Image (cartoon, rainbow, N blue to C red):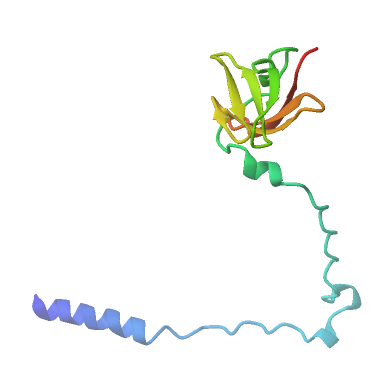
Amino acid sequence: MLIIMLLFLGYRVYRVVVPKPILFEPIPPLPVSQLPADKGPGNPPLRPPPKPAEDWSDLKNREMFTYKPGVTEIGKGPENELKLLNIVQTPDAGYRARIKTKAATKWYSVGDPFESYQLDSVDPETKCADIWSTEDSNNLTICIDD
């Protein structure tokens, strides 16, 4: 039995080392000079024009795997969750804003985070405040209602 297995293994090694001879030779392609005029390789097609540059900056600022549909009803957006009540100047020449949210009414300085927002800037002349929404990755502007 061992002799049969060695003969079989030897034959398989021989077939790998010495491949079968090719029975036919492939036909070489015609030289370019002998090709018909309409069958020549010719020039490759022109490249399509480049696509116009687009602004992709909003992709890096928003959450990738959550879908938040746009506001469909008037008065249901995040701007209506927040209300700017007052703006005062602090002793260090900064400003604080009193903002009413769903949960509470508090004073916030520029840069303070609250709920899912962060106060970015306060403008006492226009009586408005810019707020960054971390949930929507969006800037909101709220103003004091006169």
